[in-house]
Length: 59
Image (cartoon, rainbow, N blue to C red; front, side):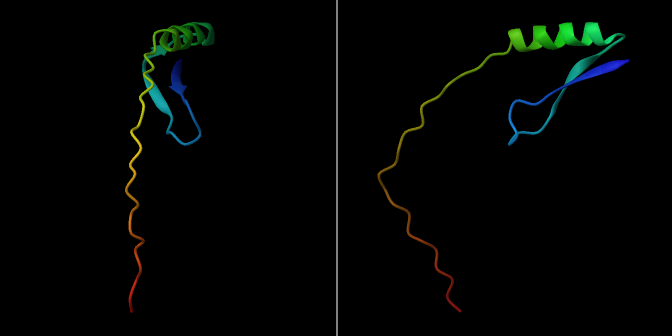
């Protein structure tokens, strides 16, 4: 039996996909289908002109 784990980036955790597969070939096919159907959205982040005040620890 095989299960699928996908990791997009080193900064993100592994994601286990649903399903169990009898052969490695079936698992690879399911992984390709999952990645082909993945929805990726690119979002622009507005830049703030305000500068944050530095936090200074006073003892």
